[in-house]
Length: 302
Ligand code: GYE
Image 1 (cartoon, rainbow, N blue to C red):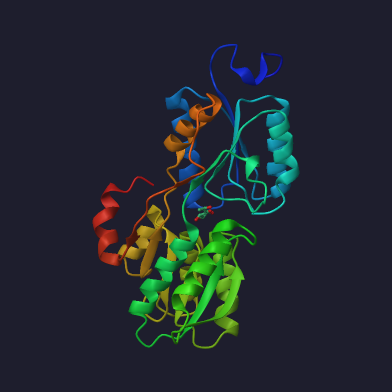
Image 2: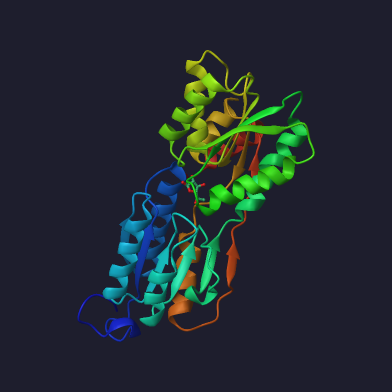
């Protein structure tokens, strides 16, 4: 169903489910893989997908969601660019009886009736795994600089928290921390500034591969050797990140799985059919050292 002038959200016309999907943007390799997964899974599941790219702006996502409500889609899925500020638009969807599924990123709202389920990673756990590895492999490293994801985004807040918790009580300390907005250019720019202003950087902790790859460019340009003079830890494990890890330019990657499409379509069908779904679906993930990256790379899909 869906579209204008039909029977609305009851699925009474062609029997096809229409999903409105408001994507964050195209900021990273992770996001590109996620978008492809959602589009391919929709086609496979016979779900009619209306897709928008919000270019990392909340106002664009809100507009897209509002237009999906007006078009009376059967289900709305979105990956909230930041955690707060969603109540008003999600209330509009609720009043129109259109179920909402959070995918990849969570929102921070007291009203959990605004969405049916949240499918995605445990970002605090990811940050912990990064910090845990560093704790065990720090050598004489002390000074950590942090490249944060988008300010106010769930993965930025949670990856920071998990990491800080894991290194608490050690000699390691975060001496500088700034957002690189999850982009390669952002990571490069912030790292260039850190290399000028922060003495004795031992470790870079980047909230995603792309920012870590940008930092590598800045480190090389400053005449230092990434992975040796400065240790680098990132999150995601996309192909470019894994390639740098295999080459020893990144030292450790915590995996974050972008292939959420099939699970999302499954949940969408259930929600539209009025079936119960779990309030939280966590994706399974691992971590990679350089040796493990070498072994995994040939099979890596994204
Ligand atoms: O780690 C990053 C992307 O929300 C988990 O967003 C996602 C993050 C991912 O830009 O690369």
